[in-house]
Image (cartoon, rainbow, N blue to C red; front, side, top):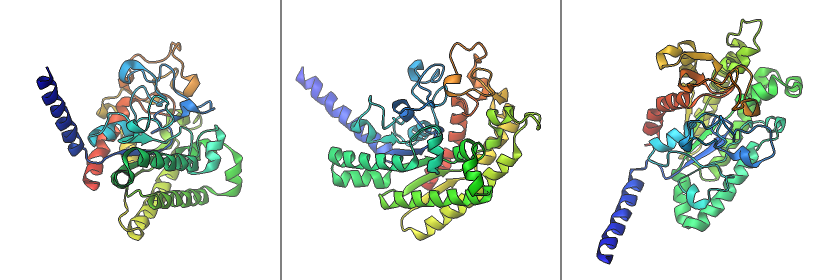
Length: 350
C-alpha cells in the first residue's frame, strides 16, 4: 500500500506549503493586558485569573483558557484573518511549546500596564518581564528553526500591543501613590514615555510591524458605570476624556517613531475608541440588547473569581450583551471590533 501512502504524504506537504503561502505574516506576537491575555495569568500567583467556568463558555470545547471572555479575544480573530491559527497560545501554558509558538505567541498578562506600579497592584507580570519572555522565546526560536529563519519570522511577524486602561483605572484613580506624584496630564506623559521606550526596545530586538491599540472609552465599562452613583450610572466622561487625550499623545509618539526609525511600521488603532463608544451608545445597531451591565453575575461589579458559574444572575445568552464581566467584552464584541480593524491591518501590513 506504499504507492497510496506516498502520494498522500506529498499532497499533505503541498497543502502545508499552500497554507504558509497564504498567510499574510509568519507569526502573531502579543504583548499587553487582559484584553489580549490568552492564559499567562494561569501560571502565576495572582487573584486575577479566569481559568474557570463560566469563562470560556463559548471557546472551542467550552473550556476556560484564562481568556477574560466567554470565548476568543481580539488576537485570536486577527491571527485567523492573517491566515494563521484561530487562536494565539499563551507563552506560559505548559500545553504548548516552541513548535506551537512558531506561528504565534502571547506574552500578555491581565492586570498589567505600561507602569510597573500597575502590575504590582494585583501581582501580575510587568511589561519588562513580558519583554524578557520575548527574549527567551527568541533564543528558543533560533534553536528550533535556525538563526536565519528565526530572524525572518521575527522581522515579518505582526506584533499586537494592547495596554493602558489598567494604568488609570487600577492604579492612578484607585491608589494615591501616582496621584501624589502627577496630575493626570503628567501621568499621561509619563506613560507615553514608557510606551515609547518599550516600542524602541522592540525595534532594537527586531520587531518591525506593530499594531498598537489605544484606550477604549474606559468610563463606560460596567464597573465604572456601577459606581457612578452621582451620574445616574451613566458613563464617567472624565475617564473617557482622559482616554481621548492619552490616545492623541500616543498617536503623536507613534508618528515620531515611524519617522525616526528606518523600516518601522507602527499602526496606531485610535479609531477603536469612537467605534466602541458608538456600540455602547447604540447597541441595537450592532445586534446587542444590553451595554450598560455585563452578562456574568449581576454584571455590575464582578470579574475574575467573583464571576462564578453557580451565580443565578449570569445571563443565558451572552450574544445579547456587549460585556462579559464588569471589565471585559464578550466574544461577540471582540469579534465585531476585530473585524472592524482587520481591513486596516491587512492593508497597512500587506
